Amino acid sequence: RTVGGVGTDVTKEVLGDAKAAVDSALALAKHGAIILHPLTTEDTAFLGKGDRQVEAGLQHVKGPTGFSGNDLGAVLSYGLSNKCDILFSSPWQGWSSGGRSESGPGDSTLEGKFQVAERAGWVFIVKPGFSLPTGDADKGLGAGKSNIRLYGAAGRTAGPWQYYFNAGYNGNRNSEDEKDYLLSASAAAALAVAPEFLLAADLIAETNPDPE
Image (cartoon, rainbow, N blue to C red; front, side, top):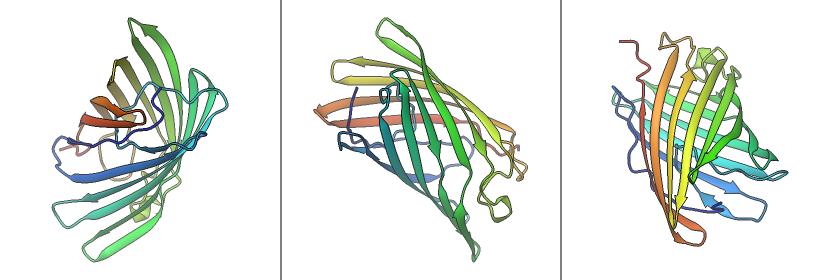
């Protein structure tokens, strides 16, 4: 299991809507390792029974019509066993557009991560979860409704290389007339260039939430 890494997110596309994003995360593990981990693709590693991890991430988005937004998120993870983690996240969000701006807490999420199989060097996991409408939808800081999500992932390590593939369903019930669900797929590769550093690339495709 890699306990540290750095990466570069080279490609991130949302079909039908191009946007630029800067994504970074800081994790503090029990051994004090510092992890810069921008990958959106889920890996197949686990913390280990009784281990805890706190991650913080910042995302900045600018749209073509002058919209800009920031998302400062925190994720608390705990290892229930060597093959099961639970994760809780609660972001702080802000946006501005047309002279108006809002900020505040966003929707919170609770997820589980379970290993379901291991074959021919590949590890397979599932990651179900649900979100709670803790953000103020009237201010554009949340969906206004709870949602469920389910992701599956496969991962393999071969020498200094790591490979991951994901597919997911994300419930998107909301108060903005967007699609009620989104489908996604992603792939990532990471190369260990030093004992505690990785160079990584991420490729993601996701359903456009715009119903038109």
